Image 1 (cartoon, one colour):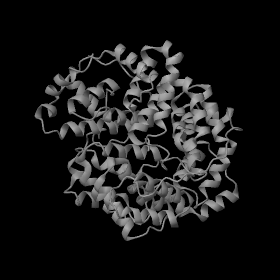
Image 2 (cartoon, one colour; image 1 turned 135 degrees about the vertical axis):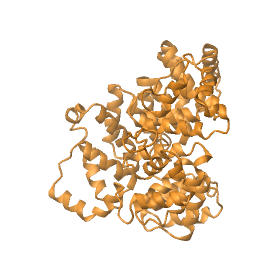
Image 3 (cartoon, helix red, strand yellow; image 1 turned 90 degrees about the vertical axis):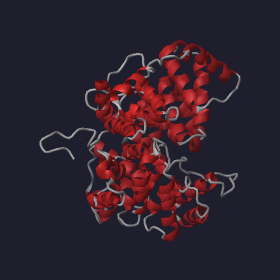
Image 4 (tube, helix red, strand yellow; image 1 turned 180 degrees about the horizontal axis):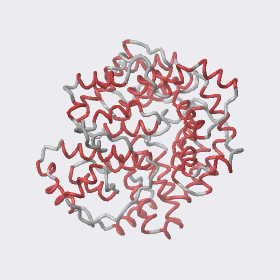
Length: 494
């Protein structure tokens, strides 16, 4: 807690996406075993070996406080190197946070790198039919956009775009997020390809639609409207709603200019919100869309919403059975006061469970998965799953464990699912996805139960998790009208 009379800093209460990222950086450095990492002065000397413009210890403190300076990709890459983190693991989270915040991601030229050779070697490899990893495809897209715009407009751009989408169709989580950023870097030229791939094979490519939120061209917006006026199930519709919300927030005049093109999406959203049988992730997105559009509701619509008021409150993360303070205090006391001892951690855990925006909530969970230092907090949080009867909190806990990739947390979720079948269909849906990442053999029985007894979306997701775990043979026929691989609709973003 800040002393009385002193303003609370973003480090102590990180409530915005980029403030949370800065908090993570500070937490990583503060918990390092090497005293030269913990010392801002000595850390600056190491960091500057990877930067074209040097930073002082004062600059580092400003960056990590999230006050007067902001991170950029070159600074984040330098942190990655000095902290000994996996390649692009920190950059991925920076991109995730930046895109959630609605900002741009600037890619500066790196030091000590023969970028020309790297770019041309990459093009030669693609031309020879080689498969490049997502990180290298992202690097090619960045270099093409920043350093070789003429190549981007030619055949080389086609090779890069096709390779990125080929890889996107078989990727998820971090790799999918990196490839999504690669699509954004390619800009308007990739929009027709996204439309073509999504139309031909929606199960593989539907999440690529999310990249259109950040490709600011007329064709990108028109493509989104085209998808919005197609007949897709609710899980896919939520993937369309999220980038449309981004566009409308950035350019509110489109609500008026394209109100007719948005009419179907708005009508579908009204129907979704009052339908408890619709996927809860879709209903969450639709609630935000209706508020953004300032939708005027009929008396019939208001009456139907009142009938499912408690259910809607869970979509809004409103506290009913317990307060968030009750839950956070329990987690704190069960982890030797970890939330109290680490400045800002209580706010981070709170936001990973209670932030009302679905994708932002997932982005906070991803931050907690970078280091094992937060694993005890995640494990205890997972154990509280059935202690809080609010379905919204239960769903958030499960999604947090999946997004953070917490092995211990997922085992706790598995134990809870094995012991007691949840009443809420949304909780079962979240569990069906999360157990695809767990490692317990008993998960097969739980997933088969979810598949055989759940609602349509839960059945499809459970079957996909069974396949992913190797518990079920891939059938020749994929379920018609099924959702994309990630029911959160984002590998970021899920």
